[in-house]
Length: 125
Image (cartoon, rainbow, N blue to C red):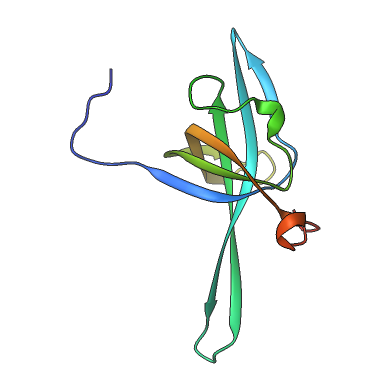
């Protein structure tokens, strides 16, 4: 049951999968976790073209609106729809409290465009 209080938490991203995803079985369901990069290109104040890349952590559960997880690999273009979630944790080394953001995907589609096909390099992913 989804009860709404009039607020919206929705995100849609299209970008390249970073590292190879991690697939795990949890009970009777399967989950996938991966990172993806989105980029924005703009001109700064001096007129220099700047490409700004943002990395996103994505988690999804197998089911409706999900492709077979074995089709999601490093360099593949995916479109992800879902919601943002944050959680706090304490860093083991520093003892510092940190905030972690992730996209909980309820729909993923794999697109045909990959980094190699579009001429982008994938060395930094």
